[in-house]
Image 1 (cartoon, one colour):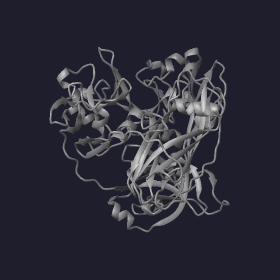
Image 2 (tube, rainbow, N blue to C red; image 1 turned 90 degrees about the vertical axis):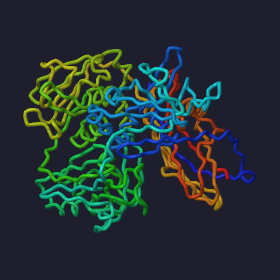
Image 3 (cartoon, one colour; image 1 turned 120 degrees about the horizontal axis):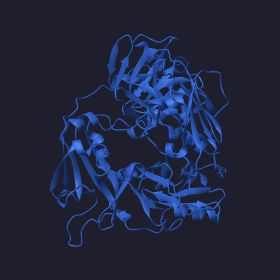
Image 4 (cartoon, rainbow, N blue to C red; image 1 turned 90 degrees about the horizontal axis):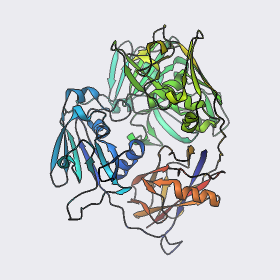
Length: 594
């Protein structure tokens, strides 16, 4: 069963004694973890717990205690070089060459480990939870213990450092890099200030995420892409442009797309004939774009009527723009409980988010996405907003997956073999470039396949003998927000959350809400869920997690000084025994108390 939820956020303001009381709870302990390496970073407790929501792992020790946290190598990847996000964040080459990783406690006690056996090893965990609750600050004999402890099956007692305050990597400090590199008939590099000094264009736009949620619209200021390409030789209809982010994510745009020819989902006004403008944006609603919102440079598609466009075209963290030869479009047909057509740019976007690598016996490096992710698009009759979920239950019941080439050659595999198997991959890149004509547009390969199971020129994937499944319920709500008291006020960066379709026993993606104190007094913020029905209320009270803790009306979720902001991470973790049908609509009400 899947549960489709769309939630709206309504802003309400309360001052103690004037509007209504709010039950206060003990203030949550705050802490920071210092990461030192080629670059430095400081992670707050809320950021750390958000990462646990995305990348968390658990370990049960010999005394049956369950520890939960983040693999140490994820934290290493944040500061081992200047790439801090995405699949390329962890520098495998540096780790293989070897460097020391020092784990330092608050009292100065430390242990040093070797990067060569930490690399992409989930058995070395920086834990923040023990048996489902945050680590205590002190042991029973008053020795420092929390907020973080290094644990794992291969560590001795002395290596399990508690009260971790700093993780230090003995790697060379990276030299400063240019903010933007342009590659065409020549190569030029520009600092952020130089980009901001270029001719600017301002208009509005927003984008639609794969879940159907709308981000924005906002007003963006940036530099027209055609101006930037003109600086290194210019583009014609025979060119394409590859844009790369600091986390390694990249997408190749056709000439027409660079000129603004992409699909418009909706507009806030009557649609105009004015072309869309693709810009490298550095301002959002008059303020510099922070790293947490894709800055300092990101792609935006804007014009006067505030269009909403497909989100996978809006690349974040842009660092490089490269002029290439022409790119030929292609489609991949997916057929199962529903039929879906995935075009080139959508596939590239998926590779950017979920890409995996495989190096074959000839030392060739292939990149693509696991087959099971594509199967999840059409394995049941879900709606558009949630088709990226893989249905484990159906895979366990059994069906066949057939991979088909352009000449009709095919191979069929069982769903049990395909299920969450990251070693069978549909690839679109070989050694960092598009596939050769003999394999183009996609090749099915990977370490999990026999040689005769590799398939070139893949154009279709078919699911056959599927067990029956039913469509989940859905809901759609309109949100409102207002601030009408001068002394106390908060604003939110979004007006709706769409968690998509979440099955019983599974979790949604993390959805963040940035809360800004726009009043003149410090505020404590709590969250109240107002379900549209008793079923909806029960659903959220059992499933909603805020900053990794189960929703509680009495919990203070943020303490925000005047003019400051704090980001709150929300997620649905649906109980495995949840079997109520119907729309799970709700309003989120944020209460601010001076």
